[in-house]
Image (cartoon, rainbow, N blue to C red; front, side, top):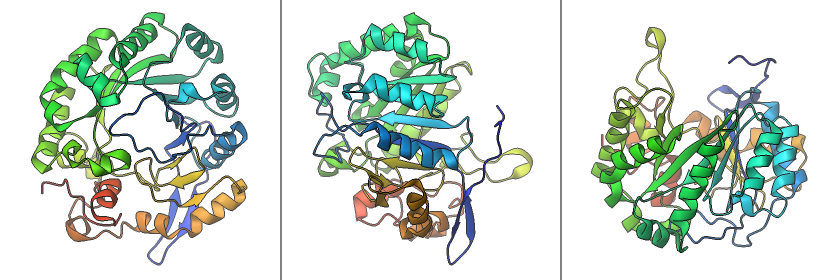
Length: 360
């Protein structure tokens, strides 16, 4: 799809280069409120507030200034459907350039009235990404500390797929414990047979509550098995069923993103601060949702002031320069992968350190 307007990038000058930043995705945590207590939750905002609609629109306005009009707005939480003005939020996002939106949800609060709202707003594409972390109901409920979480997620997925709304698709979002890697084929088959268009797999990051729970993290060999299994699964299904991961280490597996046309290097690694940003419900902007490393708090700022601070941020400049340390700094795939900066931060306290999960 072609953009219908010319996008001028956000120009950022460092000691090494001048970069043009064009955001491919912006993520807004519209509320910190949630009805579950998931063990892996990043849980950045202990005050559990709703983000006011004017602030949401200001953040989108900043991102849209430097983003193609066909790129994505991700609305996350907390549990987005728990926002006290959810209907108004989604309507305002749609009216202010939100053509392509992903909504992450645990599924427990989804009702028919939400589906009616989705149909009314006529998105060009709306992805409803429902969390389902285990095919065992007892295990899923225990992981999320919410009795009935599994059945509610399953019911939400069925509601979405059976509604068959134009341009509204169902996606299963799996946050995987190491011991469940072997369940991945069954999970993909489960999502496919439910009528979902995609399934995404994520490992648990050392962030939020999971920072104090190393048993939830994958080791290097487990991570390699995890990535390789995703690639294997990608070859087993038709193209209209997407199987994906946002882990930068996917770049180490041939077939994911080795080279593009005519041999050019393809960057498919850590996008934090370079092509995406996140804003928590308390107004803290971070390079990504898993990095509790504030660039600024956007609430008291105008869009022009956000632009200026983004351009001046040493965090942003270091991410763009890829001023990485350890083996990530010397790796021949540095500019293709870059490792996960959130994982480096969580494990070492240094967001520029090497990715501890890399098996090379």
